[in-house]
Amino acid sequence: MKHTLPLPFSKPCKAVALVLGLAATGVQANTLQGQIGDTQSKALFEGAQVTLVELNKHVNSNRDGSFVFTKIPAGNYTLRVNYIGAQSNEQLVVIQENQTTHVTVQLKPIDSEVDNIIVVGQRAGQAGAFNRQKNADGIMSIVSADSIGQLPDQNAAEALQRLPGMFIQRDQGRVDSLGSVASTQG
Image (cartoon, rainbow, N blue to C red; front, side, top):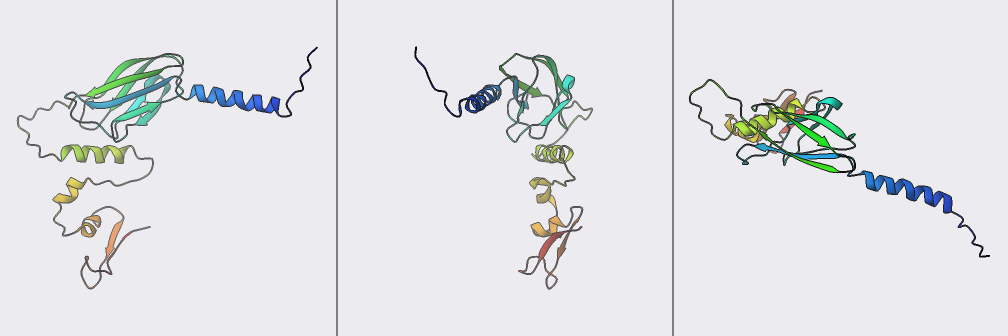
């Protein structure tokens, strides 16, 4: 009769191995990944609010328009995407057990009654800034680079003083000298 001695850490090692094994297999299980773009596939939307309606789970899209939901129970769900300046989008997604589901969402611009609109490339920057500000966890003021460029200020410090809660300390009446400081109030 062959007799084996148990290893001194066999039970704890087995438990740790089991937990790590389950965690490693569950990382990608029941995951929804997606990307949000426009109908012409020219732009990706950062800061769009993405919601799984039935679970009341929300995430915001990343800089490349991507989003991820993890640990979703298998089933059918309504995916809703909201973005300022675009029509809301809803679509049905099916989450399979132990699989990653990929979704592409294409947003359409809001139809308007205006006949002629001339856009000079700043709307996307402003819409992104508004969405980031709206979806921020705390109080935040965001100004797009395009908006700062249109201000009559001579430098960035003067533009900053236009934001709520910001002020600049002038040195010898000038903002651009070495002693100038931009600070927040409070």
